[in-house]
Image 1 (tube, one colour):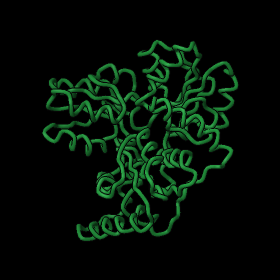
Image 2: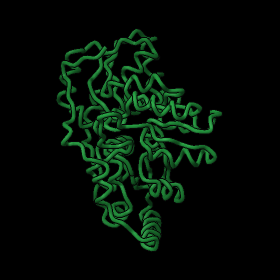
Image 3: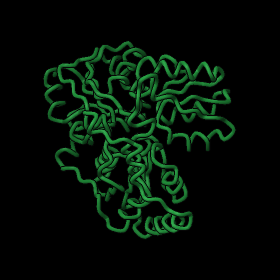
Length: 349
């Protein structure tokens, strides 16, 4: 059940265009690029730091993480890796809530990010003050929030989940006859309701990337590639999800690309995932799902503008300077730790 009594949307003018972000990034020659990468690898070792990158960052950053003992994954596995690695500094290449999650779970470690400007439309579309008021209207509900939220929102929650475990957690709560308040992604919330049968009160939020996928244009693309498998992230609109062969988290989609018999796939999630998909299934073809149909335009065009802000230039700079450190107030961190670690305990058990 969608509750729009506290409906918030991110104004379009507040969302940067991915093409504009990318156009502003430095351009390097092959020699300069190699020098940057070599310097970053040296600094990671010097600072006892490990690079943890999300699937949606540039493949160069993903490759550096892989080559230096770091990690590339979804937000759940990023959090788990940071907790078990012995590095004293975590470099989180992604968006701000990922850095905050790392700090929530590892208060003793220094957590740095290439840029603090990289945020998420789900995060900024769910302000803590308004969300807390929304929760206060429904005190009998178990509050379940997506990982794509601020530390303050996590502190107000009973559970934090990622797309990889959201269905299992909601099913678990249903078995206990719990009433559920869900936030912030309305498309993922609707998908959870449909699969589990849960009757949830849901916040009205959306991912700027996944909301742009167009069902009609997707249908046209499927007609051109009738043998392709359709892989869809559950943050996508319902009509896009309905066309999918597999709906799942980023990790689940990579696994499906590797295991399904299809020779080609149409993929409805951020196109930077193609780096890992091609590594997992090098003999297969991956096609970007359409983000623009008849009369439609896109701002992200299948790549998050905030993820695009992570680059070699600011990765090197943060290792040199130690700036862009993530801090979370201890009172907030303690509360957010409870709901976030609950997720890790659930996965472990």
